[in-house]
Amino acid sequence: MALLAKSRSKMAVALVILATGMLAATGNAEAASCGNNAAGYTAWVQQFKQEAAARGISGRALNALDETRYATKTISADRNQKSFKLSLDQFMQKRGGQAIINRGKSIKKQNAKLFASLEQRYGVPAGPLIAIWGMETGFGNFLGNQNTLSAVATLAYDCRRSAYFTEQLYAALKLIDRGDLSPSAIGAAHGEIGQTQFLPANVLKFGVDGDGNGHIDMARSKADALASTANFLRGHGWQRGGGYQPGQVNFGALQGWNDASVYQRAIAIIGKEIDG
Image 1: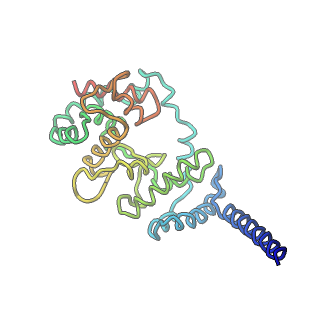
Image 2: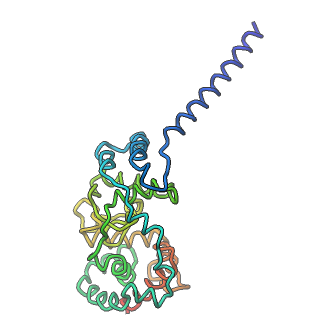
């Protein structure tokens, strides 16, 4: 009897191992696989929808994925990011630094109450917020020309940075679920959203209803976009009353905004000129 029990025990262990292996193999077979061209995109979307449903994404957002298309312009932009290779002077000229400074000073005066409230709440002065706003979208005048969901889904499918943009895609779907992003929303090539160009995961984490209407509308509400930007900077270590030039305490928060050193320094230069 002892030998029989031992034999049955070994058999049970073997069956568990076999079942685990089969489940792992099945899971791997069902996992959406990345690709490097448009050929596999449609099949990938259907696989990804199954994974997203298992993570609690609702039908509305899942159905929106069926309307996405492989974004060739997004892939082209992702492969050819040249502006960050410019010198600081070249970058400032390309981004219209002086024009942003000139207009930014007027915008600061026209929206004095808004910027005062943002500084009171987040500790971030107007200068860097206006610099970011101006450089990202020309103060909301150009938000991009790419369907946001298609851009993010394409980059999630693309093998180069699939894991990073898969999380951005989940964030975009959650924003659609809660009504803070339209499936037809238009933004920048990498899926950046609104007047200060937040990636979807940053909208989830740092997005603020700045105008108090119950929704976060990064595209149509400058109050939402600017409050969210101030909250982002605070979330990246901004200290009230500290300087934000290179070597000062708040320059690190600007580094959190963008990895490119020319972009970080441009924010600091433009912001200082606007703040006076």
